[in-house]
Length: 591
Image (cartoon, rainbow, N blue to C red; front, side, top):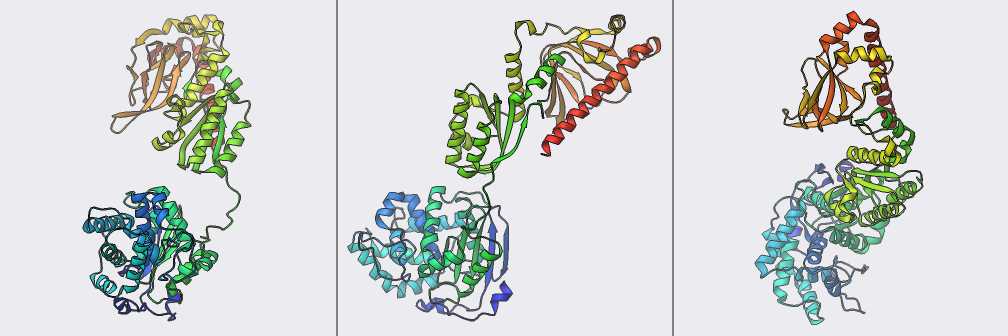
């Protein structure tokens, strides 16, 4: 595009400010910045030029931040004027300037910037522009002096506004500040980053500094959309369709909210005072990259990334065989709904509708870990969904929720779980409690015959095996098995529960892989080989276990080969069952 439009020589540099007439007319730079901070640029994208009218929406945003929307609206309108940027026209109904993008409104906006004196107000403007573009803002003194010396029309505007009550205070101080803000040096790259900051809701994509509150960004972009390109604004909206602002210094800045910012510099201006090349670059960018805000982008996608049930992906808690059977029979009562992306009305409403149709689901987990933003309407929909579910006797839990989203949801803290895994485990526990009567309460210790590993042994064989088992107890928090140790023992956990963990960060922290309840076996590798332990096993509670030493396994193999063969077959079946469950989880992830 740079090569394509470089050959154009139409238009002329601004001449009503003498210093601008000295600008090299054929400079040409293009820049595009994404909201994650990447910059694409070409040509004279780093060449400095005066920001001129592109400062108008920015200072309007600062005025909104200083005074609030109502106070600013009382002084400056938001309607397009249809006239040149320096026309001396006011809204006949209200006596206000039509909008802040023309000189009448821009001077009024500058007068609203707060500060104890002129020096402090200028410092605040420069610091605000620094936050927007990500580097210090400087004034071109030659351009400033030239503007001040020739700014008689702007003086006429300011004194008319003083007469109409639109401006109060020291008119010359307001004008001097206005001339200085228009003389700030910028580049195409700077404009792209300022636009990307607005696209990111007022937060700079590289520094992460908030320059402008999101609600003021919306107001600024609204006025840029309708009034930013002077009396070319309507055709711009038709052809390009982006909030934008041009300046007679040759710059154009355009914003695609949520995605990117564009900056173009080429000093030759058309009859509207807009960069001749800049207009064409923006038109082609909008067409080739499909940037127009009103482009049809297809049906709104649901905010739900994936839905799975307790049967698809149970919690990483290995329960007693009877508890597992009850869970598998009723696991459809538990569902996890994974949300993703930006949550707004269209996407969230679809998701809420689908969730409400799951009438058979009693325990609902909403995982927001992959969500990038939640607006106020989406938060209200989720809050009312949760309240409706609870009112119908069902349980709803949220997980993966950022602090600011948690505040926006405004729900009781008990609704939030630290992780999807913990929410899933709690839901299983509640489901088991609802299914089990008093007669189903587990015994203090699980008898040996209830362990799956010995299900094929007859009573005589069980008695023989019991003779080899040694009783051991472990305090809560005690390490039963250490990663890397020889696999010397097989543990029948008869009471309590244990955590299987992997060490991380030089063993300073651990990741829990699973929780194993009583009625299960730890360390089956001791039956198969002399391999090393692959994880730590830590007593989560007080644990009682029956321990079979590897040496005794060898003795059983010699003296009771039938028992040994049954145990080996049971280990094989156990590993096969784990593989089946792992494949089921993988299948659910691929849906």
